Each structure stands twice: as C-alpha cells, then as structure tokens.
Amino acid sequence: MTSDIPALADALAAGTVVLDGGMSNQLESAGHDLSDELWSARLLAERPEAVVEAHLAYFEAGADVAITASYQATFEGFAKRGIGRERAAGLIASSVESAREAARRARARGAGRPLWVAASVGPYGAMLADGSEYRGRYGLSVDELERFHRPRLEVLAAAAPDVLALETVPDADEAAALLRAVRGLGVPAWMSYTVDGGRTRAGQPLEEAFALAADVDEVIAVGVNCCAPQDADAAVATAARVTGKPVVVYPNSGEAWDAGARAWKGRSTFTAAQVEGWRAGGARLIGGCCRVGPRAIASIADTLRTA
Image (cartoon, rainbow, N blue to C red):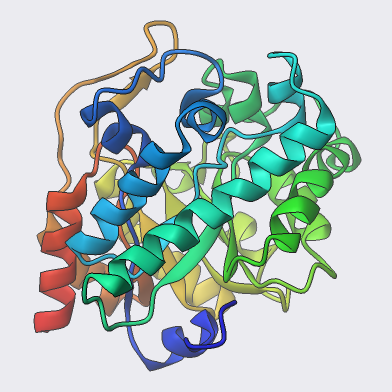
C-alpha cells in the first residue's frame, strides 16, 4: 500500500468505494484481440501500455479501485506459451505496477481522491480457459487447489497491492483453498463468488459458502462478482448477515458467457440504479465485471457520491 492513502479497510468503515468495470471489454473496445487462452493476461507481456490505459479509463470515469489484469495470469497458463517461471512471476507482478502507474497518471490529471489497487486472483477454472470457472467441481482436492493458488498469491502479495481480489470463485471448496493460501501473506483480501440464484455455481448454499470467510482476519469484504445483476440483490444481504463484514459486489452486464464460442450472448440487464439497494444491504465495494464499461462505472460513481 502506498503511504499517501488510507488503508482500504479503513475506507470501507467510513463509506462506499467504487470499483472499476471489466478489463477485457475495455481492452477489446480499444481494438485488442483477446481470443487466446491467456485472455487479457497476454497483454501484460505484449502490450503493457494498453493495460495501463484501460485502468486509467476507469479511474477517470470515477473508480476508486483498479482490479489488475492478473485474473488469468498463472504460472501454468504462461508455461503453455513457453514462458518460464521467472518471466511469468515478473509478468504477474507487473500487473500491479500497471495499475499503480494508471493511478499515478490519474492523480497527475487531477484525481484528488484515494486510489487503490486490487490484485486479481482468478479461480483454477480461469487457467483452464474452458468456462469451468462458471461450474467449479474440477476434481481437485482443497489441498491441491491451495498448492495451485499459493505461489501466484505470494508473487502478487510481494508486489504490494492494497488488497488481493479472490474473485469469481465458483465453488466453496476452492474458496476454502484460497482462504488457506492467503493466510500469512500480510495483504488483506476480499473474496467474491460467482453465483446462480442463491447458490454458488457448484451448487452450494450461499449461507454456507460465505460462512467460510466470516472468521478469517485477512478477509476485509465478502460478496459476489461476475453474476447476473439480479442475483446480486439477495446475495448482498446474505453475505452481510452471515459474515458481518462489508460486502463487495460487481456483477457482469447480465449477458451469458459462451465458452465454446468465446463470446458473450444475450442482453444487458445491468443498471446503475441497482447500486442503491446494494449499498442499503451492506455493500461497501461496488462496481461492475464483464461487459460493464467506463460509462456504467461513471453512473455508479455519480449515484453513490450524490447520495
């Protein structure tokens, strides 16, 4: 954490913080092809300036937090492209610096509010690049999932983000692994599930899934992301009730991901007006995920700051 801004946990105690929107849609709107298995993580190696500009667009739209482009950045994923562990570690760490650079530029352009960096830690299914992050149940034990996540978490923690974003978690077993892996790293975390109705994507009741994080000191917020906006409504209230922690919520546009076609289908149902209900239910970190762009984030920021 940089010394000139308060800790994110303190900010959550004082009010509501605006998250950014989807990294992939912002990069695609700038003309970048994200059709390979590394998705936005490929640009950490090939076009890092594009990542900085994407973060900057969200800061300028009113976001207080940039979520790094490390969602799909893993040692295993980079290895498939012939990138060794040392280089992969450097690329994973660079995702934090790209977001920091965007924050510096935003401040230079007049942003006087605190700006934070959340290091994205995507689920095991993101590395598989086959849509299984929306199913869970990979056939791996909690111990195996912990061994997968811990090395990347260590690299990201060493890069000194303000918070680790354990995000798009489809399965309570994977959540248990992540909560083990985050212990002792010295960086706070939030944990957010992707859900379908009142259950995780793997089918576990949300009450049980959220309860895993209730007594984990490292976790400063619990909630949902990359789910349909309408599924976020009840989930926010459940997370607040079960954990007693601030809630994080950043749904996608409401469209559905077609893993075979590698495309979003359907129509958008996301509206900035929904954030009032989320905040009333206990949400303190509010933004958008896939297909939610700077215009929507600007509306969220205006809604929250006006209120």
